[in-house]
Amino acid sequence: RAVVVTDQDVEQRYRQQAEKVKIRYVAIPFAASAGQVQVGDAELQKWFDQHREQYRVPEQRVADYLLVDQSAIERSLPIGEQELRDYYEQHNQEYGQPEQVHARHILVATAAAAATAQARLAGGEDFAKVARETSTDTQSGAQGGDLGWFGKGRMVPAFEEAAFAAPLGKVVGPVKTQFGYHLIEVQERRAAATSSFAEVSGAIRGRLAAERAASEAEAKAKNLAAELTKAGGNVRQKMQELASQSGVELGTTEPFGRQGAVQPLGMSPTLNAAAFQLKKGGVAEPQRSPRGWVVLHLADVKPPHLPPLAAVKEAVRRDAEQDKARQQAFERLQAARAKLGAGGSLDAVAAEVGLPVQESQEFGYGAVIPGLGYAPDLAKEAIAKPVGTLGGPTAVAGSAVLYQVSGRQGFDPAVYAQQKDGLRQQLEQEQLNGLVSSLVSARKQEMGVTYDPALLKSMGIEGQQPPQRG
Image (cartoon, rainbow, N blue to C red; front, side):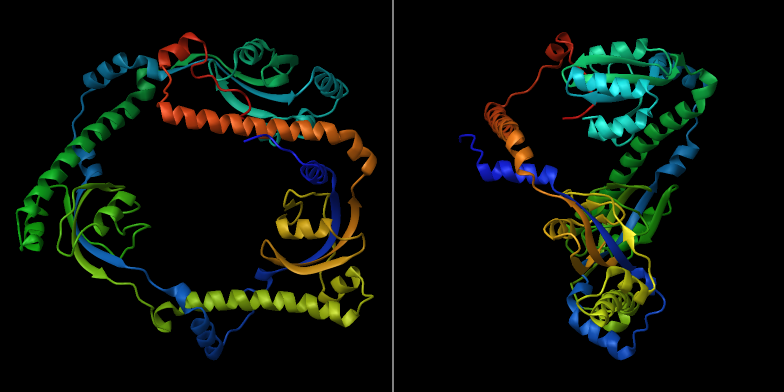
């Protein structure tokens, strides 16, 4: 397909970047009434009748199980000191800590932008502040440019060379890479070091015991499953006999569904899947759980059902109270606004409900409103309103919000005319990149393309990660 960017696309991109508003608002949290809202029995029954389906219990299953306790096997395994030392010597490289630096950076697109950022730093501005305001690496920029700790081989060569040569606390750069121009500040440095045997012997013991116990537990579970499969109609009796072995526990699960934890065995999706593939009375292949290897015998199948109110009363009461608190928050704002009439001010509404008027920072179409949180509908609605207009009440992040547009930066035809060609090129490039990427991906799938690790290594790109993704 061809790359097509319409005038409407260009104008929309400009508006998304340029149009911004500020609002003043009054927010009543729904939780403000928590513990104060009373729901009578009649209201409770009405809520349950209207929302019965959301309390439907899906199919559940109950299983008897034999658990091979891997931790018990671990505790019983003897591992001598010589074996620990042999492992340490054979895997010594695993206990080396390479040289690392803790750095932050500011990434910009041009040398001129780098010079501007550098001048701001030289003038005494805070590095984190400049990074947040100017860095095109939005991931680290949000953290004041912080890249955390990294060793060699993690960053592209030019960036890595500059970072590991930089004096502590001194900003170096700009360093040019394929991502742009970087200003780098190394905050901390760790020298290369190797942990002693005494420091890691406990960890080695735990690792060897865990590996050996896992293998022994799996083998034991397979033997248990084979014994149960041969038991025919006497599976439960056979389970009781096998449970007399050391490290084997017999139990029955609580009812469980296709997803979620299988109590008391813990979270194990493969365990759920195995149980739901069985017919009643069947025995599953051993599955790993957080507590060890498990052999299941399906004891009961509970079909989907709508429970009576008594069985879910507490959940229904909580939901009904939350809904009532939500309604009351909206009603308070609506009543206060109606009482003051068409000419009422936001400050008067706030006084009526006994809450302060708050003011947001400037925001655009990004859906996150400073002070309120994620509110895409309110953001879009507020940007379309003239200054001074009231909006709401509307639900935002657990609150009922009544707001007034207090300032705006609108569409500027002169600025748009200056930026129009650049925005069009930007959109065309984005479309082209997307088209090329999708074509390459499709072709790679058709041809079964894979990458030769040795070739990547010879090209010097094995394991490299840029300081920004994307």
